[in-house]
Length: 331
Image 1 (cartoon, rainbow, N blue to C red):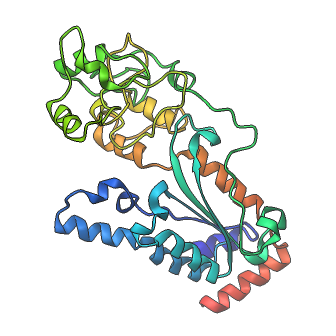
Image 2: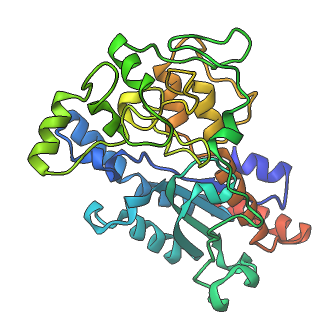
Image 3: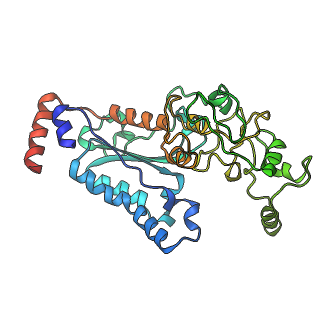
C-alpha cells in the first residue's frame, strides 16, 4: 500500500506513527502477573525494536512515537533510548522530551514521552538543535497555547445522574454507583482530597483497606480516589478507568451531579471532537479503554504538523527519481 500511494501522490511525505503498548513501562507492570501476561508484556516491551525494522525497510520521511512518561527510565531496559539510537543509525535526526498535554490544547494534565525523527537529508535546519544534523528540536508547548480548564471543556454538556444515558448525545453515558459510593461522592467537594470521607453526614466512609495502609505507612495514601475534579484546572490523566470514581479523581466537578464523568466528557478531556462516536454505544468498559489508551488527538495533530513542517520536500522530479529507485530496490 505504501508504494501504491507514493506512486499516486509523489512528493507527499510519509509519517510512521509508532506507539507501543504502555503497560510494560508503568507502575502497573510491577503487579503480580500470570506467566501468560508476563510473556505478553515482554513481547510488548520489544515492539519498538521490531518497529525499527519497518522504518529501515520503508524509509518514511518522518517518525513519531508517544508513550508514558516513565518509558525512558533505565529500569525498563533502555528501550526508548535504544529506539532513538536505532533511528539515528538509520540516518534520522531525532529528538525526545517529556511534555504535558495541557500545553498543546488538551484540557488534561498528562505527561508523555514524545520522540520525533526526520531523515537527515530532508531536515530543515531551523528545526535542528544548534544546527546539529543529529538533534531535532522537540517543542514543549504549542505557540500561543491557552491552558483549558475542565469547566471550559465539559461544563456545557447536559447534567446526568449516575447510571444514566443522554438520549441525544452519543457516549454521554455514566456508570452507576452503589448507595455507599453515592454517599461518599455527595460529601466530596471539587478539587479536594478524600480526607473528607472520615467525617461525612453518614459517618466515617473511608475504606478499611485504606485506613490499614495509612496506619502502616503513617501517611495518607490513595488521596485522589472518590474525589471530584477541580473545575478551574485541566483534568487529571484520563485512564482506561476514567468512568470509575474508585480509580482516580474522576467525579464530576458539579456538586449537584453525584456521579463520575461520562464517556463523552472523558473523550472531550482527551481532545476528541464532540461529534466523534465510540462504538458499541450501549457499553462502557470497551469505550473507556479506547478513550484512556488513545493518544490525545490534539497532541498527535500538533506533532504531525510540526514534523511535516520540519522537512524540506523534494521536487517532483526528485520524487519521481526516488520512486523509480525504490521500485528497482524493492522489485
